Length: 530
Image 1 (spheres, helix red, strand yellow):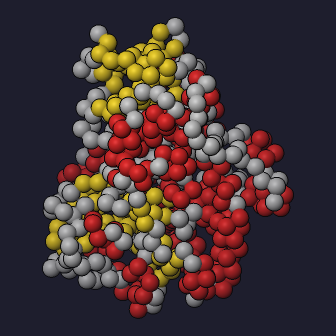
Image 2 (cartoon, rainbow, N blue to C red):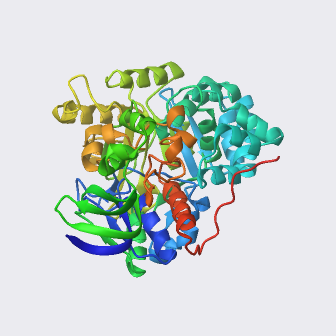
Image 3 (cartoon, rainbow, N blue to C red):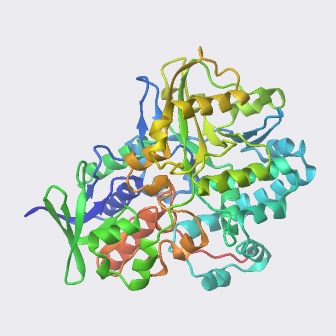
């Protein structure tokens, strides 16, 4: 029973699926987006889980590099209600000894903060900012918003002294890359912890992630009104231009006929036909199962069945507050209270290393460490007038020694433990100030968004075997699959994160394959001669 025919069908109503569909309506197509949850957004969701009016982003909160993201420009999302702010104080790291590091959008103010720890590190930051943020950032954008390149082709495209220097980071681990440039133990430990935020692992071959992350360290944005504002704007665009978004619609099969994807069947028995394409915004392993593993080559099946979701997830405490957190280290630098993305919980690199070793052993780290924000400092709409909402998400394993369900059994205990650590840095988080709290565990991450297997907020770890052309597999790296008309556009493809890159790259592949009009200017292919 076919209940509808569309030009294309998109599986998954997260921001990537919606971005792909939005590009397709711009290309003159009529797509259908199918989302199995009652809401759209995937990892871009905002909820009020404790007190009405206190809004929390349950997954994505820090949007990186939006001013260079082509989908905002191409789709004119401001016309559909999406906007964001870029706080002038971008990053902060507060330590138990009362000192802190503050990263400003203003490079001179950042260097002044770093110079209090090391003049060498201040000059190292100045050099990297000039080279990677100001000079080479267009290159990082083109690497993200194009199909990934094989290592040999990447080396051929990046020439000159700056290109050679960048490529020299490729074989390094994240920590080795940090050590190459910085010397103070507090500066280095902060940057090493910061590198793990992308679900990256400290392995040889991840050094280019250090470069791209440093290029964007001052490019974090907060969506006005909540992370859900992005998918809502995309859905409004799609519906306004002839597409359709349907929730409570779980796909159980991608239908293939004559080697071509021709539609889908839902869990409730309904069928929808696709004239031209089917695109999957869910993870690649799940997509393969919807088609049938036999449709994929042995090497693809082997890799996707062994997909590495990562050794760590996030354990988040959300607070409804009467006043924002005030940090003791503000006596050292008052700007720490103005920092958007704020890190706390560790003292040195050894503690950082132990934290992730313990996560790999399914142990809650001895030293809880991670980042968070008080969003109401930058957008008062995240809480009722005069009140505040804040969160902190330290790194944690998906499962505890007694299994992932251990999070449910210890919810009250861990809520108190996280709040106790936070109070060591912000003593004004008293019982009178904290109106309510909500713990969102790695198991809750998986329950809410089932494509985030084992709490994998990036749909798979960033390790060399799952980066660049290897994400998810070289035969799938261009967003195409062995099945004609079936495309991948989710975060397990090249790009990942909340940047629209997997969807953007898939949209360009579909337009090329179907010879459709392209009412946007593609990002130039990567290249560097400086």
